[in-house]
Length: 153
Image (tube, rainbow, N blue to C red; front, top):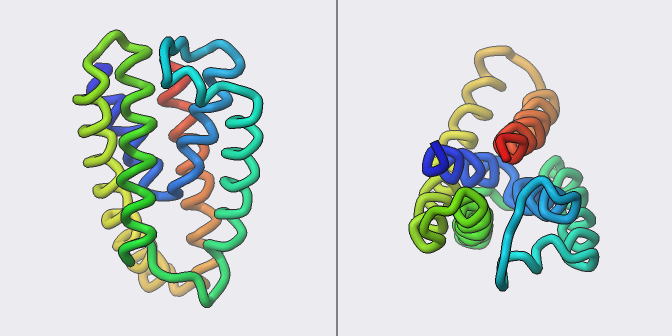
């Protein structure tokens, strides 16, 4: 079950690269996700503040027309890195191998990136709606999904 949760947190990070780390930081800060060692620093007040601010900024910037595609190198690298970080946190909290968690979280980040991209394009066409409408739903899925994963601890 923990391995599946590491994939899922990475997947939701693939939808919005900073939402999963912000949710993870809050879960550690509030005591729901128990981490030891260097990974516990994600739950420090400065980390919580930084991740929260940049996650909100990402939610806004994602809607701007000049924002590069999430599949571009910078966006993809961010999703791999943040999927790896959050996957490592979830694996550690579940008493599993941290490196394996990071790898599976990173794979989840790649899956979320590309599947989310295809789903968003497909939904806009199928529903004949504005991209903004689908993007807002995707935001909700990334937020709710991250919270759902972290609430398992």
